[in-house]
Length: 379
Image (cartoon, rainbow, N blue to C red; front, side):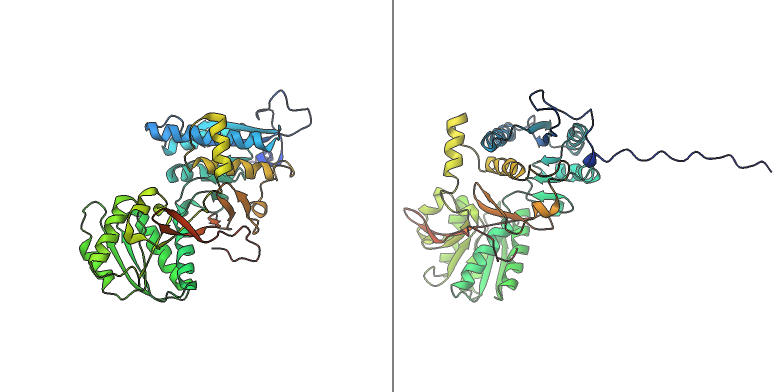
């Protein structure tokens, strides 16, 4: 028998990206020697097939640049990569940014893209501040900085209960959004210790509102959640009234979808309540954006501003260890364009929201948004 051939030991693994600087990482000439820049990867659908999506991506990038300017930290670098909306493109974008040394990734916008980016970012220990509303893609380093209907539902249900409503029902669209809202509604009612008197679903496309409205009307609720906006919201209010739901006795409840001028034109929504960011909190951002770029920013642009502002706030830590889960999930939260927000350990976001009442001349603030999360429970 021949003696065994000696096996050379395996070489030690290469240094993990989050532990050492690499020559391939992007560095600008104006950054002093010895300074490790804060490299921020930004993944947005700049070249999406939809013109409206491209315009949104452009506005969000402008807001990110505005936040960088306001932060005044010249050692922060925004590195962009394209996500057309396909998983392959999103993964390629993430790999490009990681190769360039990104310590944190801002974006993507779509849930499928977030799913594609997640394993690559996790492998490098790089957190992702994504803009998807799909909570299924959150967690394990993926944080969703988005406007999520669960926050609005919890806020309006808990407020209604605090005002003496004891039997709350819901009239919910048969959509993916409606599925999320129904789950959130049942959870919010359970946490508020109030019975769900009825949940009826309606098809937004069929226009058949009478039967589901009648089901809700017969349940004897003293409050009804209607998470719908636009002309369909006004049609639902009229159909509920036709089904003998007295708005003087039964309080209609809504989400941020109500926050548009058309809601004020429906008299049957007078004094109804809905949850939304507190009015005027984004005035300063909107004015600054308008002055800098012209035009009004879409609401989602504020999320990109908040993401980069948060990065700048945490940027003074040890390089490659600045954006830790502990720092990102600080229970005291952060101040954003639309109010305070904080991340839960599962990657979802909790927002401080106001409750507004619908009035013919506008919306009235009936319960202000919190300005701090100190001593407050997480969603």
